[in-house]
Each structure stands twice: as C-alpha cells, then as structure tokens.
Length: 595
Image 1 (tube, rainbow, N blue to C red):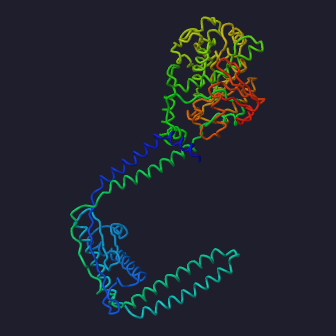
Image 2: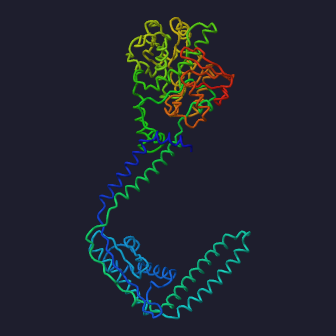
Image 3: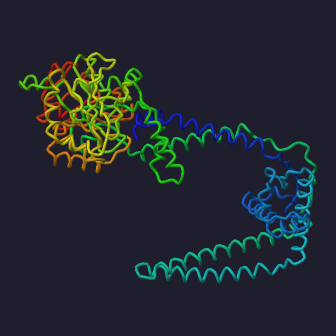
C-alpha cells in the first residue's frame, strides 16, 4: 500500500481510530484501577551441598547448575506439591490455576531460590509461600528415603532400548519415503526420536544425582521464611496505558484498512467509466448528512437488529433536504463542473442550428440515489450562469422536488397540464432564482402515469423551448416503475445518476438495457455521493505525477474528452480554450468526461 493511500485512509477514519483508542485506554484504566490489590510474599530456600568434592552449588559449571535449578523449579511447581498445599489450606482451586499465582526463580548465580506467591490477602500470601517451601523439603526427604543408586543402570537400559527403536524407525522411514505409507513411517520415526531423547534426559538426570550424592533433601532448607507483606503490588498503570495505546493504535489502523478494502463503494469516476463504458459528466461529493463510513458498512451487512436500524437511520438522514445556499463549497464547485458538460451540449445544438431547449431526463436505477437532489442543484447552477432553466417534476408518485425550493405541493402541476386542467404558464412556478422555474408533479391518481406516454406530453415538450434554454425532468427510478422508461422514450436524452455508496453494476446494466430498448440515449453518468477525498484533485496522491498535473491543470474548467480522442478545456459558458489530440490516451480511456 502506498504511503498516501494509507494517509488518506487514516484521515478518513480518524474519528473511528480515535474512538477505538479512547475506548481501549478507558477500559484499561477502569480495569487496572478497579482491580483488587494483590500482595506478594517471598520465601527463600537455600540449596547446599555437603559433598567434600563440591563445597557450594555456585561452583558447579553453568550447564549443570542450569539443569539442576530447572529441575528444582519444576519440582516445586509440580502437581503433587501444589495439590498438597491446596488441600492443606482448603483453597478450592486446581493446581493449574494455583500455579498462575506462584513464581520460582533463582537469585542471580547463588544457591538461593525465591518462592513467590500472590494473593488478595497478605496473610494468605505469607502462609502459602511458607507451606510450598515446607512441602518441597518434605518431598525431597521422601525422595531421599527411596533413592537407589541402581537407578542409573535402569535408565541406561531404557536408553539402549529407545535407541534401538529410534534406529529401526529411522531406517523404515528412509525406505518408505516414496511409498504410500510414508506418512505413517514418518510419525513412527518422530515418536521414536522423542522417546529416545526423553530416555537420554532421564539418564543424565540420574547421573547428575550420582555425581552429587549429598544433594538430597537434607541439603535443602528454608533460608528466610515469608513475612506478611505490608504494601500491595504496584498497579503499573503507566505501563498498561502505554501497552494499550500501542495495541489499540495497531488494531484500529488494521480495522480502518480492512474496512476500506471491504468498502465496495465507487472510489473514482474512472471506475464507473471502465465498468459501464459511458462518460462521467459530473462527480458530486457526499454532502448530505448521513452515517459514517463504518456505520454504512455495518448497515450493508445482515447483522440482526443493528443492520435494519442503521438502514432506517440512513433513510431518515438522507431524507433531510439541504438548500442550495447550505451546500459546501466543494459541492457547489462540483455542480459547476457538471454544468459545463450541459453547456457544451447546448452550445453544440446552437451551432448546429437546432431550435428548442436542451431537454434532459435525469433518472437513476434505484430510489434514493439522489436524482432529485442532483436535478435541483444542477438547475440552480445553470440559472446562476444566466441560462433560462425549467425544472419539471416527472415523478408523479413520489414528488420531492418542491422540498428543495420551499414550495407548496398543492396547486396546478404536470398532471393537471397533461389532463388539460391547467396551462403550462399556470403550472410553472417562480423560485428565488431569477432564471429558474419549476413545474411540480401535481395531484396523483392511478391513471395519471398513462398521460406521460401520450401525444399531449410530446406536444408539451415541443412548446417548452419557447422561453427556456434547459429543461431538466426529474424522473422516477427506471428500475422501480415504468414511468421512467416512458419519460426516457419521449425525451430521448438521459443523464443517469449513480450512487457511489450503493454500487451495483447489474442494476446499472439493466437500466441501460431498458433505456436502449425504448430508444433513449444516455448522454453520461453523474456519480453522486462520492467520497470528497476522491473529488479534490489535490488529494489524488496515488496518481502518477504527470496525470495529477494534467488533471489539476484542467480541473478548474470543464473538460470534454470525445470518442475520437480529442479534449477541450472549456469555461462555464461552453467556450473552448484549447484542444489537444492525445487527451484520451493521457487520461487512460478512449472516451471519458472528467468533471
């Protein structure tokens, strides 16, 4: 992963990372502070040798001393000794659990061993430490009484037997490497090898005891009994805080990266162009209030209770209307860039001598993709550039266009005009924007959608251009009702809105096939609700430098990359500034609109 991609992910998921870190640290603090205090008692045991040849354990060679003290430590922590202490003190636990509270360590290179016991009660900690030391001395005393010098010969016989089995298993394994039973022979060889090594270790331990015959229970004694601890163990809060900080940072960064890769939303307009093969005429950042990216991922899963609640919450938040004056600056600029593509089409119509307005149907494949919002804000952007714009609410079933301009839904609308109950002038309503008018849907009944597929609607479209440069028709989702397909067949020119947070190429392909069946031409795609980091050209760190420079050079203008490989840099009026012949190849697609 490139550094800038990781940086973008961390910045995008910053609040989630901070939340996880704060929760982890807070949980650590609560756990450490509320944990009952523990007391540690220490009993010291001295291991002495009375042999005339060896005056002190410290004079043993380091290898022998290591084996000796490791054996003593494991003996102290053995199940038999711990079970004896448990029964003696009525602890009501298992040796395995009891062992977790005990520590045995050698003091430097001396012949002293410290037996440490932790407990919530200081008196209990002292008593258990002394009882373990006493039980160990008694265990060794019993061992001394039964120790027999002939044990060394017994272990020698065990080693010879294990060695023979090992050699036989090794030969069988080497012979059967290429045979079907090779796995069985391998397992037998490993088992024999382990048994042989265990027999050798036991023989060496017996030889060590024969080498030091006076190292017996009589030479092990309590050097310093445990005393009642007066202070509890330090809580080490700073250590746990540092550890929790490091762990939570690593874990939260991993989660952030995992969520980013599990996120199937559209990341860039080039992704849409590559999948659908259509020009992207607008890229609108996600400016509506909604759920966070992490919550959106959870909403798309099938988690019981949580996912349905998050989807309901998402619909409620997306239903909130944001007026054009409340748009963020980057969203306003995004609609300006989408406006440029429409301005190019309108200018071309004028140059070709065609009369009438540029009439475009704006639709989507699914509900809640943002087509009504795009229609409203795109119309406002065109009107601010001086174009005469008429917005028509063609969604007779679920009209929402009036909410964006604070208009009352009652009164003459499109349905009344189609039924001859009102004229277009009576249905058109003025807005706060001088060059922008709106025709609402009117009153709905079950038969009104049939009027959309009538000659009267076609005549209405023919008369709309008398006083307007652009007519933008808001349509129902094509995949929801037949109204969208009917409107597309009558109007002929379509802009398809794609929700970047709900990608599904199958839905878009079905919509495109349906529009093609009715003879409609899809002029381009408007990618809505995309992550703002993918819209701002200064944040496209992962692009090669020459592509980034090229995009930043044209980002402030409209750029049309035509199918023949030429592109033009345009101002808001649609006037060409420059043309080069390798634009499509430079930006990686033979037919693309960047805006």
